[in-house]
Image 1 (cartoon, rainbow, N blue to C red):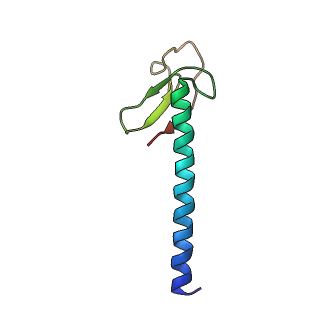
Image 2 (cartoon, one colour):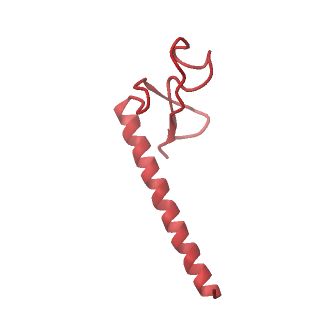
Length: 80
């Protein structure tokens, strides 16, 4: 593979990666706007550690979930 071909492959992979990220962010934004976790139906919250990070209210261990009497959920996504 020539240097030019390698550069073209790298550009192609970068564009594909950006498209996957954009699709995942759009889906997370749709979920955020719905206000409900797509996995368990609980509410959502923003994790302020990273801009755009959203999580199910039931994400995390006991004591960190909104209602520790209900099962944990692992949904999280990034809107930005």
